[in-house]
Image 1: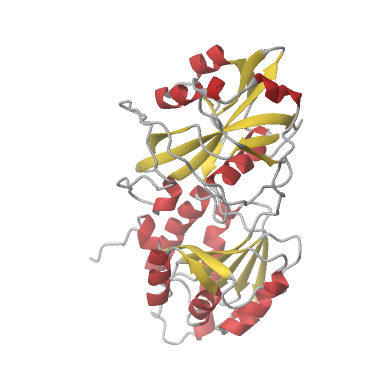
Image 2: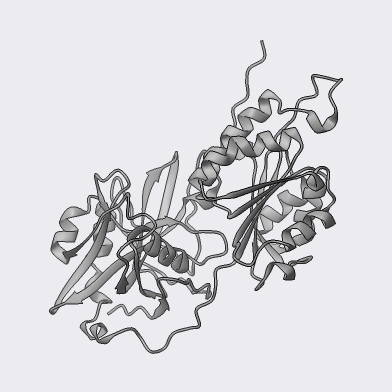
Length: 379
């Protein structure tokens, strides 16, 4: 019998404990294939349109015992037409399990214990590529009356047979059918006693170089140069990417130069209506030290900051802050920080004033051309 150890993730905090992924089942279906992963290796599939990390996702399979009957919690898709599991992109700085538990809180308003290893994985087509989704059993102990997506989703407890009937994806149904292997009735006595410490999510830094600017008007001051047509197209591409990747910083710090302001203004719709935007003249052509000091001054309740600035300072800052990360991404960053690109850095310090050289991990460097930036044809 497959037994999955559990770690607790509360409804208000997410652990970033490193969780070893184990081999999981291997099967196939015409539209949605179960996949086998060995020792946490990522499935190598041909992706299109967006950076590869967008297609790596994780989900929770919420369950409980009610009067001796195993029940599964499903939620509706945003459109309300399908019954699905809480799932999302594995977020920067999170393990797949911790990211899935975060989705459980945001999409379903539930807290509980999440398995340390996935019960299975399936894949589906979206965004011009193939998404690989690891599914983690999630023993529910608490439910919120209101939660982040309660206005756009419904949730419902169902018997296992009824849940299998309502889920349309055959690959996902195969995984749900295996739930009795890990959902033991003894679990109804309460949350597990052995729990790792729950720690706060990491800080995220989004370094955003302004998009390509125009040099057509030689009489303009550098500070007042607008975006070029290619820069406008790049902003549209990055706006799509930020919406897809669920990038929602608490604070945006932006150079007050026109090209930087236009870059962020065209991206704001994707960042949400809760973000605080501050223009700062001191960030205009600022060096890396000036930008570092500005990041360090961020308030304690800010978990994510986007800084919109200029080269060479923003490139120097990105290289200076980065002490590790994906090897391929590090190589690209050292080579060039193109106009319109965003570098995502993960900072695990307790407070912003601890931010310093080499304290961050580079998650990714995303360029407009990585997400299908279109260029206008020349006449």
